[in-house]
Image (tube, rainbow, N blue to C red; front, side):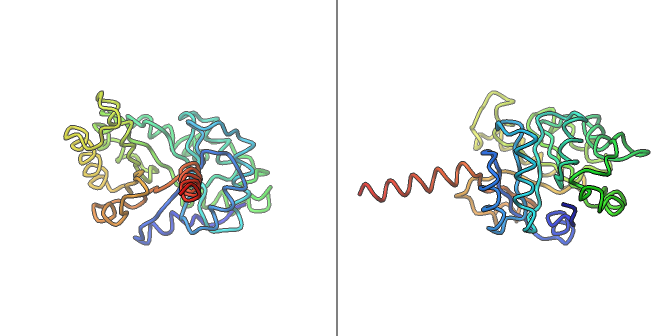
Length: 254
């Protein structure tokens, strides 16, 4: 259903925002988490087994709440972008962005002609099956959130050029993949990895883009907000379920 982008409006207002990842593809879980106060939920289509159909059900499940619904795409391809947006996603996230050309491709695929190449489907769910077509088309650029994940040394080096691309709203740090890109998988506290993280933060903020990142649930988000981050994901549906179940079992076994 068409509505204003809650997350983007909060970011514009200078407010700090929290999100949660959705890996399970469950509309029930999506509905529950959308009622918990997260500013955004991210449907993962890079690593999780969900389909376009499950995404439609998840988007519908959250539609009674203000929670913004984003989709992390399997690839930076126009058909993936078009399907997600026509289904009603309010933002898209592209993995491993490494160049201004990739950033331009994302913006072009999510923008209607003459500025972009996105096809117009006025009977899509995003346009309330045609009943909000005019409003959607008039406000799509202002209302849509486009995000690039920085997950490699090449991506960090390209940040100044990526930030010059109008229409890219946020760069999102993938610290684990960044560590893997230099052969130090998961060693987030390694000095070389930390230097790359610091460079990602500095270059993104100097480039005038919003800055996002995944953090562990046991980290204090305020520490990262103080470093300039605008959007943090602190949990996922699987982690929340697993940790609650393990805690329950541990309590019962005492």
